[in-house]
Length: 241
Image 1 (cartoon, rainbow, N blue to C red):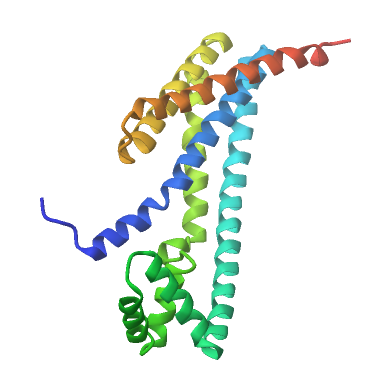
Image 2 (cartoon, helix red, strand yellow; image 1 turned 90 degrees about the vertical axis):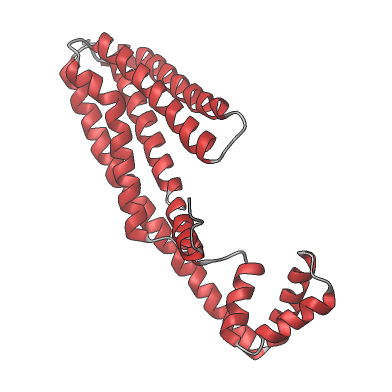
C-alpha cells in the first residue's frame, strides 16, 4: 500500500476533526431520545402520544444542536482569528518577542540553542513563515483548528437526527409501548457500544477497545433507567382529578 502524501494526510486530519461533531451528535441524539421515550413510556400509556412527542423532541433537538454547533464554531473561529490578527500586529511592532518565544519552544522540543537560533533566524527572513510557525509552535494552532461553521452545524444536526432514530424506530414498528421500550433500549445500547468501540477504541487504536464500548453502553442504560424512573415518579401528576 503506497504511503499517503503529506497533503493527503493533512486533508485526512482535517476530516478527522469532524469526528467530534459526529460522535457528540449521535450520542446526544440517542441518549436524549432514549431518555424521552423511557420517561414518556413511564408516564403515558398511548403509543401514538409517545411517538409524536419523541418526534417533536427529535426535530427540536436536531435544529438546536445544529444551530448551536454553527454559532459556536463561528464565534470561536472569529475570536481566534481576531486575536491572531492582534498578535501579528504586535509581532510586527516588536518581532523579537515572537523570535524569543519561538526560540524557547524549539529549544524545549530538543534543538540546542544554536540550532534553534539558526532556524529562527532563517524563518525571520519571511515574516509570514515566522508568524505561521509561531502560531503552530507557540499557540498550538493550525488550519485544522479553524472549523467550518456550516459543515459543523450540518454534521451535528444530521448526526443528532440519525442517533435519535435508533431508539425511535422500534416504537414505530412495534405494536406496544412496552415492546418498543425494550427494543429501543436494546438498540440504543448496541449502537452506543458500537460507536465507542469503533471510534474511540479501534480508530484510536486503544489496547482494550471493548472498554470504550462499555463506557458508552453504561451511559445509555443509565440514562434510560433514570428517564423511566422520572416518568414513573411524575405520572401521578397527569392523572385525572
